Image (cartoon, rainbow, N blue to C red; front, side, top):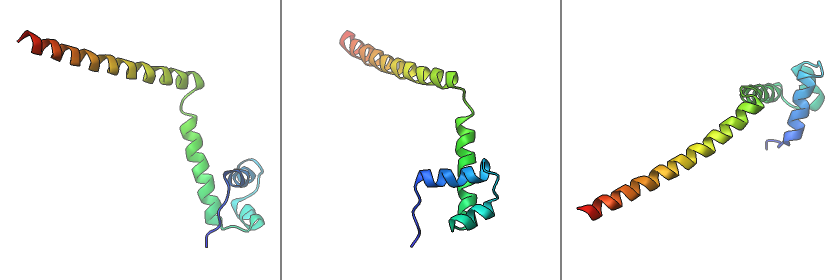
Length: 92
């Protein structure tokens, strides 16, 4: 049966490799887990870190603001379409 590890446990194991100066092999042996497991955790951390670092904090805030504005504009557009259709039907 596969063992389950908490996010904190995984983060600490990855820190031993990335910041602690230990090799993946050493960490795997010390923690009693497979080398492939450590490899997988380190790779996942690199992928998630690269995704989060692509935008600065101000860019994230602007993106959030723009998405909200976009949603509002779509709602207004849909309302105007429905209103135009209603008046077009009553004129005929």
